[in-house]
Image (cartoon, rainbow over all chains, first blue to last red):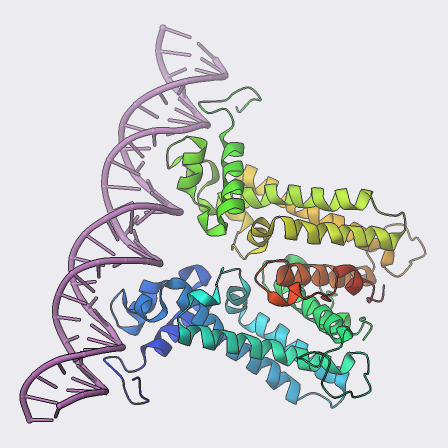
Length: 211
Length: 211
DNA sequence: CATTTTAAATTGACAGTGTCAAGTTGTCTG
DNA sequence: CAGACAACTTGACACTGTCAATTTAAAATG
């Protein structure tokens, strides 16, 4: 079985390949992500990456999972600095969302590109990490939205598995759509309108929602 | 010069290639879009498409432009059936936005994927059509948002080139972000939460905005 | 410690891709 | 009719993902 000590030739090739891929995406754009280029960067043969990740889609999934780690970190970091009010907290999380998309535009767009990744096609390790990391970052936003649902009388969690009223679902869908659309449309440098001096900050948009 | 009559061998290869590309995206997914497959579908040699569009990015730009035609049509069609109020009109345009994304998921995602298309790199015809069509479909949404800006005292258009108050900019940015994020996140079949029975319709979200 | 077994990684090949340079063919102009 | 020019073809190239077969190293077994 795979132990914690150096398992084989390379040591920890999985991580090396993911890091190589992240660097490629960041410095040369998403199109530069290639199994063979990652292999060269990690100093292994051209077919080694496919062996670890069951093909290109597996590598992409692993990179996206790692990206969600950074993404979640950006949101957490912004939120711990926020004022204690619920609104300030949600605003901070969204600013973390936006600032990640701005600082790591290539990676952000890569993460939310349609990759047709079907979890069932991934190998066990890759799938587990992928699902865990993606859910974890989404959960941060959901938690920040939760206080804005219709105030239930603190019922014991016997409603849904997520202890959500349907109003919660509306709120988080609205906030997520808004922040994600804003990030996708305006955080790339291509769209000129976002460079206008009076282009609205996201906080301005958020404050206009009925929460 | 290129006249309206049959210019050369094929007749109208540009359109044939774009149509072939649209069909590939629709039936086999965005990854199946290939210069060579389009060439085969159109019955020409493998290098003919690159000659017309200056490479793959040119073909993509032309397909995106054509996609925006269909996209704009979907929004227009929904809007003409709407009730006469401003709110009903905006809601209808957004429903057109969403229904296009739902009906043509592959194409929609392809259109809004980051393709790193730099208009200056396109040839004249492709660039002109690309800019015209993309702006045209955005304009439909902007027009539907316009009535919700702070009511200026009908000043003669001496403020900005677009005759927009900064409040207009906030409104349309908010609506566009919201509808785009919703479409991107939930109109693909991959995301399970959108299948929940009480998952909110977009109209429900729109009605929560302060307009 | 020696042997077997298993996982990790390599090698070589293949079809498919975008792109480029050069050549060919059809059409229009003067 | 002749030349010019655009549309298209041909052939080649480097690069890609994937696969089967093989080698190598680590671990398990005795």
